[in-house]
Length: 66
Image 1 (cartoon, rainbow, N blue to C red):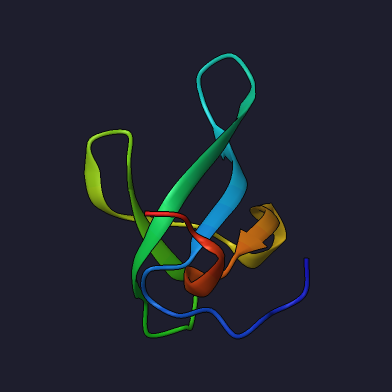
Image 2 (image 1 turned 90 degrees about the vertical axis):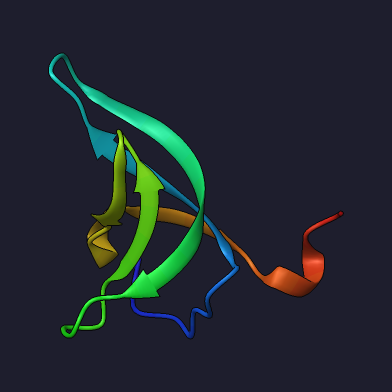
């Protein structure tokens, strides 16, 4: 996926590397690294960096139900 305008609070679905294979995960964007890659809470990390090429889908904040 090419770079899109993400904001903190948007939900992203991405493929995350695990020991056996890649798992599809959906998480909320919590911040950004200096290089622009989004960070999420995943695998016990509060700042898990997601590369742009790993992102499969984006659900903007205004489309998320409460």
